[in-house]
Image 1: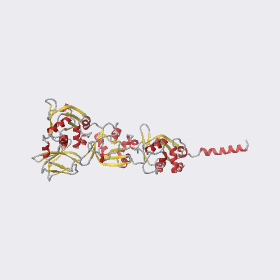
Image 2: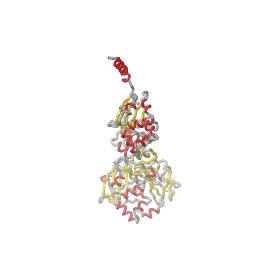
Image 3: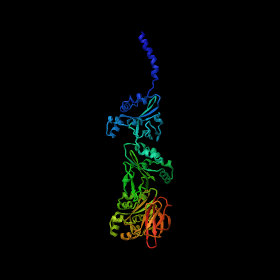
Length: 513
């Protein structure tokens, strides 16, 4: 061997140990060499972030968007890659993808919240039942690309630190809702920064009430087979602020099991099915959140029966009388004697008015509640008797020839709903047989309505009063003094007030806040 070859061999032998111990890093050895991350490399180079990711003393987890992910972001922003590289906050976007700890895929847990270098927002992790991993809305498409100073997970979307409806729920203490959303694996959907949602968000107390109604606990709720359906029933696929909601509006939820029925009262209160909006218009970058005092369920209620079977006048009357929220309660059972459209038309003719006149009746709510009985009473359970209604008065059931309710005939019985049953009748039941003018002549009003503490009654003095809940139970009675009735001791809800001053009587509903 000549001296030149001997020198070369010695040099090679000297270098081998050093090359075997050379450190790798997440930038040089994974991102910069990947044909699927050339846009990410260009962005990192432009923003001068390569030295950070090359630091051998650091420990990093990088969620690395692919080239296709950058193309998708460019399309959403109506630009191109050059336009993305010109974004003023590009450095913030990039550092939002980097953690200063090393987290392999096996260490990711469903619902974990991790903090990136850019601290404007956290990253929400999802692990699905089929072991798919998401960072926010982005799917990890290539996990565990390891280097000595960390790990790279390829993702199919670029992450943005926008404040989403998920963040609103987390930041405002909706902890049970957040846990349910995590359990149902819905975080990636609701955290999409380019989607638009309206979320009706039940409070923690609302979920506790639901658990009580179902005779379970919060863990039992999280085990419900239709949990995802219940949660997506609280979500609209567009932004709807409180001012845009109209009384009687029927909204299509993300869940297609049922629609949501919206009520806006004369006092400006908003209800979603039976649930009241207690806090409206909490805005997010991808939608808006309204807090609810109850969980709404996609159950088929007696209201749905009326809507789905063409009882348009009855439905309009229920909406006008602001009874939609009451009859949509999935945990209160009702028997409804439902007049047909023709029945309402006949009543209008009898009273010398039209349907608009019927809807303007001062005791419309009382008339409608006179058609509702507490509990589910099938046709086989009807007996010849007087049956109390939610109006406080009773209807008479006559089985002599068919089934008669007062002077109306049941033409179709036992249309069942999840919260009761509907019997179709061919006439409108009137608690007091008066003409339109005579009804208007009573000229009594109860105000303010809704109210928190007192109601004031006009044109009746020292009248006796009875207050009943919508299940027909009397909750309070007495003699009115100075035209005032104190209801501060009643729970929030809708009540029937019956007044009698020995010369006239009056019934109305009042909402206690």
